[in-house]
Amino acid sequence: MALSALQSGLPDGYREMELVGLAALPFRTLTFPSYQSHLTRSGTEGWIALGVEKDGVPVGLGLAQAGRSERFAGDILSLGVAPEHRRQGIGASLLRGLETRLEAAGARFACLRYMTGQKSTPAVTAMLQSAGWQPPVRRQLFGESNFAEINKAPWMRFCTFPPDFEVFAWPGDLQPSERKMLQQNEGDANWYPELLNPLHEETDIDGENSRGLRHRGRLVGWIVAFRLAPHKIRYQKLFVRAEFQRRGMAIRLLAHSIAGLPPSGVTEAVWDVIPGSEAMLAFFERGLLPYCTSHKWSMGAIKPFSIEI
Image 1 (cartoon, helix red, strand yellow):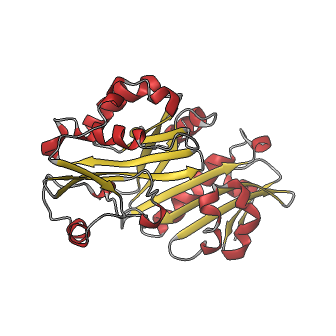
Image 2 (cartoon, rainbow, N blue to C red):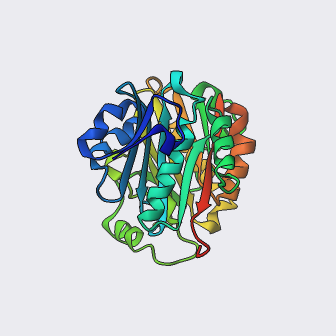
C-alpha cells in the first residue's frame, strides 16, 4: 500500500509505503545491521516496515514490532533517513505511520529507545516531544575505555579474594546443579534480576574472560563478557548476591577478570549498567567514568494509545 505525499504529510516527490516481505530489502541500508535480516518478516509476527522513496530511490525506513517486549507494547525499533533527505519531515511521518499501525495491531502504547551523544539525538528528542510522547528517561549507561586507562584505577589493586571464595571459568566450570538453580531462579529476593540472567546468549559468551564466584561452595555471583571484536570486550552482566555486595565482591570480580586478560590482543572495553542498579551506577560514576574515553545513555520514551495503561 502506497500513500501519497498529501496523505503522509511529506513534501512533493516523496512517497510513503508499507513494506511486506522482500519489498523491504532495498531499504535495508537504512536500519541497523542487527535488524536487516528481519526485514523480510515485515507483515508477519507483528513486524511492521514503512518505507519512503523519492524517484524510486529508498530514502527512509521505519521498523517496529507489536508485542515484542510486552504483550500490549509496540516497539519502534528503528527510524532511518538518508542524510541528504533529512529535515523534510520524513522521520516524523514514519513515526506517525508506525504509531497508527501499532495501535491497530492491538498495542496500548508505543516505546522507543535511542542513544545520547549522537548527531541525531536533539532531532529525535524534539520529534518525540512534538508527537506527544512522554518525556524520555534514562534507561542504561554505556561507557568505553581502554585497559591502559582502566589499570590506573585504584580499585584494580583489589583483584584477589579471601580463601573462602573461589573464582572459576564461566560457563565452562559451572556445575549442573548450579545451572539448574539458575534456571529455576528460586524466587529469592536476594537472587538475580532477569536482566542479569547469565545463561542468556550463552553460546556468545567470551569464556576466556567471564568468571563465576562461589562462597564456601555456593554460587554467589558472576561476570559475563562478550567479545565484540578481537580487541574489544563488552562487560554486560555483573552480579553478586546482596549479602556480599557491601563487601565489594562485585568490584573484586570485575578487577579479577581484567587482571586475567592476556598481555596482548584485548585493548578496549565496553561497560553498561542496567536500570535499577543504583549501587553499580554509583560505582560507574565514581570508579569507572574518570577512566572512560566516552560514555552515553540509552534513553527510553513511551506514548500511550489509550487510558488503559
